[in-house]
Image (cartoon, rainbow over all chains, first blue to last red; front, side, top):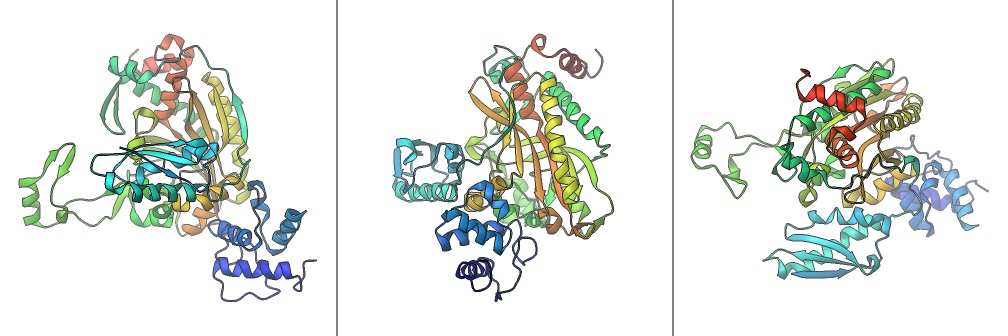
Length: 82
Length: 398
C-alpha cells in the first residue's frame, strides 16, 4: 500500500522534507530525484541518509540509484524488512 | 613521538587507504600514521614540538576516520575488465634507475623534471590516447593553467576537494609594498620569506582538471548537438606528504576527451571508452584492472559523495599494477557526471540540463606504470612504442 494513508509513506515524505529543508510537503506531492528542488545528484545522499536514519535502515550501494521517488523508497524499505 | 587513538568503529580494509591518505591534512605536526589492531586503532608520529597536542590531534584523526567510514556500504566495487599478466619479470622501482640515467630529477615535493626519453614516452602515450579522441573527430582545444575562483566555486570544488587546491596570488599594485618585497623577499629553507600583507586577493587558482574549463566555456548556452572535444594541460593537486615520485605529482599533465550532450549520448560513450581503454592497454602490453572507484573527496564530504558515486557507478579507474610496490596506480579514468556540470554551468541539451563525461589520463603516471611494468630499457618495450619514443627523444631526427 503506497497511498497517503500509509504511515511509512508519511514518514518518508517527512524525512525528505527535512533532508531538503522543504517548507511543506503535501500527501500527494510528487517528490522525486531530478524534479524536487534540492533533490539532485548532490542532494540524493542527504535524502537517503535521512531515510536511513528515520527507519534505521542501510541501503546497499547498488540500490541507491533505485531510490528515485517516494514510492520507490517505500518499496525498498519494505524489501529491506523482508 | 608515537601516539595512538582508538576508533569507535574499525576501519574496513577496503577503506584503509581512504582514511590514511586524508590524515596528512589533519595537522602540520603529523609525520606518519598507520592502522593497528585490525583497524580499531591509529598510531601516529608527531614532529618535535607537537607532543602536547597529541590528544587533540588524535581526536581529529578519529573524526576523519569516522567521517570516511560513516557511510560505508560494503560490496560496492566492481571490476569491468582486467589482465593480470605482467609483460615481463621487471620488478624494480624505475625512479632510481631513471635518476641515474639523467631521465628524472627531483626539484621538490611533487616536482620532477623529465629527461628526453621519459618526455618522449609521455608524448607517445598521449598520442595513443589522442587516437581515441580522433575516433570522435574531437577537435583539440587549449586552456590556461589558471582557473577562476568563480569556476571552481560552480564546480563545488572548494567543498569537495579543498586540500588539493593551489591558490594563486601576486603582489598588490602598491609601489611601496612592491619596493619592500623587492628589498626583503628571500628563499629560506625552501620557503619564500616575505610580508603576506603584500599579497593580492585570490582571483585564480591552479587548475586541478582540464574539463572544468570546457564547461565554463559552454556556460549559459544550449547545445544543438553533442559536443566532444579533447584538450591537454597541466593540472595541480597538492597532496602534502603523499607526494612522491611520478606516482603523485603536485603538477602533472592531463589529457582529457570531454563529452557534453544528452544523458543517453554521454552514458552511451562509457562502454565504448572502456573498450577503447582495454584495446589501448592491451596494445601497450600492460597488466591492468578497470574498476569502479570514487574521487578523493574531502573527509567532510566523503561519506555522501563517495557513496553516491559508487552507487551510481560514475567513475571507472584504470589501475595499473606497479610490481615494485605491489600496489596499483590509477593512471586514468572514465567519468560520468550526470547533469551536475550541466546544472552548475547552465548548459542545456534539448530541453534538459546537459550531461557530461570525460576520459582522463594522467600522463606522467601512465609513463611511470609503463616503465614499472616494462622496465626502462626500450628493448623490452613493444616495438611501436620504442620506435615512437626514439623518434620523439631525438626531436624526430632519428
